[in-house]
Amino acid sequence: MKTTFAVSALVLTLSGCAVGPDFKRPALPENSGYSEGAHATQTPVAAGIAQHFNDNAAISADWWQLFQSPALNQLVKTALDNSPTIDAAHARFDQAQAVLDADYGALYPQVTANLGAQRQKPTSIRFGTIGTSNAYNLYSGSIGVSYAIDIFGYSRRALERDQASLTNQHMQLRAAQLTLTANVINSAFQIASLTAQIDATQAIIQNQQNLIGLAQQQYKAGLIANSDVLSLQSQIATTQALLPPLQQRLGQTRHLLATYLGATPANAQISEIHLSDFQLPVELPLSLPTDLVHQRPDILASEAQLTAANAQVGVSTAALYPHVSLNASFGQNSLKLASLFDPVNNLWSLAANLAQPIFDGGTLKAQQRQAQAAYRESLANYKLTLLNAFSQVADVLGALQHDAESLAIQQQAAQTAEQAGKLVDLRYQAGKASYIDLLNAQRQTQQSQLAVIQAQTQRLQDTAALFTALGGGWWSKP
Image 1 (cartoon, one colour):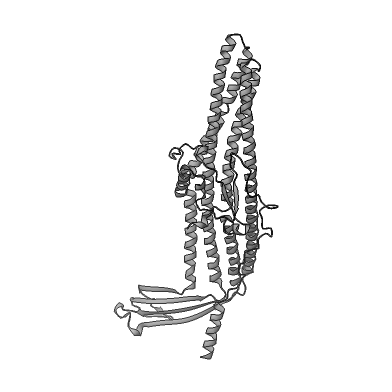
Image 2 (image 1 turned 180 degrees about the vertical axis):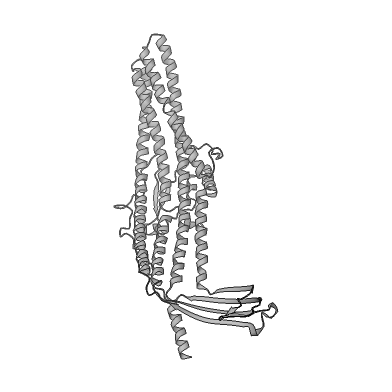
């Protein structure tokens, strides 16, 4: 009895341990900021707006609603509901969940029931003599129980790996949703920008066509040379040549957006989108670097991969140790079905097995080294993901500063070009400026208008990029 108690206590004690390293999250970079020095608390004023950075402010899960565009909200919802990319990510998550659920069975006894019936006729030759043999029926029924005692944590490390793989797929799903949302928003901004550039170019062409009508009248009256008319016609042709590339890019962007929405270009039904439909968010959140590692899906997915690699080291280490299993069975055998369950036909067995690898040609050791090398690779990938994330946030913060500066400069340049154009037009009508001067002024006005549109679009896109770089706020909504 003492021996039995001691063995049982030893098994219970060993079953509580698991060989291999326990996972520890790598240390964060020492610098607590995203870039050198303290970051600015707000951007320069542009278009009457200065954006403010609020440290450690909460990020809404539906952050795109801050642009106050019902059309944009509907586009994002449609994409998240219908995108095949999201469906595939959901399916991968479900697969990882099923693998984890299946491997949980290793922690429990395995019970198997068997029922059999057979008819057979043995050979009549027995021990060198020829006798008689008759065919007979044999009926059997049994229940078997087997249980692998997880002394060294092989099964528990495998479950730890599977749980980390499930977390990885969960974060991959979140990353796919965040990437899709960012792509839809950027496409919407780009469509609005291209539409505005096309409208501005068409307005310029209309003004130039009005001028050429006046120039032709002046030419017939002998007031100007034919070369002035030809120069103006050349300028109109140059401006008109800008339209096909813009229209082509607009079509391609709409087709790309249709793909994000899970529809063909013919069935996407994308409404008209204009820059005036969007309001630039003024208050912008800025998470602390220590919080970023718990928010960004790509960092969390990389950490889960690192956890899984660490657990795999434990699995390969546990494979080097003994495997202990218990087996039991109970059943009946009978020549007659009616007497199958009579006590006289009972059969039972109890067995304990211990298997210890002794020689395998170095296979298990090599698998352990492979798992350790895979962990080092995952660790390097995790560090690289972390560095890229910090760099991306720093880039966006700098971009928002420069976007405001650029927009302010472009707006000033556009106002100056417009005023200069009006003065040149007055001078031309007074006969004090040539057509070349007028054409140059118009060209400068056109370029400045398009530059303002592009600067406005870039500011919107970089604002959305900040929310994306911070993780998108998925954790604030179940």
